[in-house]
Length: 166
Image 1 (cartoon, rainbow, N blue to C red):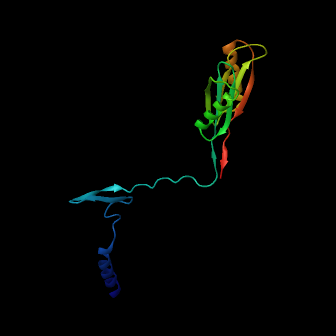
Image 2 (cartoon, rainbow, N blue to C red):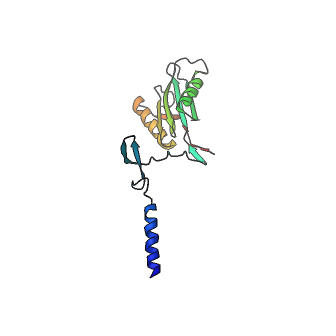
Image 3 (spheres, rainbow, N blue to C red):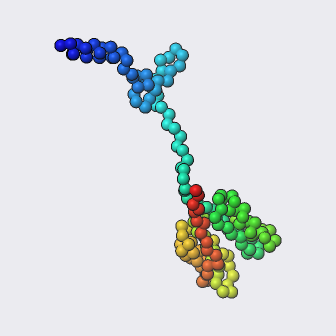
């Protein structure tokens, strides 16, 4: 008989020591109070997500600049930012004194193609970006033919591919 009595006395002594999660709030909440006000249970804020660690793929940018007066072209791929890609394309277009260069296309993690009328035919180029080199080339050829009404050929095709960063 002593054993049940001792257990009952032990539980009676420990009962006041039981803890309530965050001051009688449900799990994941805490009591937020101000002077003179008991407060309410509010959610515990989540920690901000950490940036990924270890190797990861970084997408890159490409750009095409054209001088409408001379037809000069400047291209770049593999740039870290769109701004850098545009700047490099403009610099390459202006290399031989071309002063009216403008960026006509910038693209991230895509392929670009330029199609021109074939042979001696004249007309505006078609400049297109798409998810792969085949698609960008086909779209450029189709656009060039629609603009100029003649057969066209690919003058430029390149992809801005991701880079593995460690």
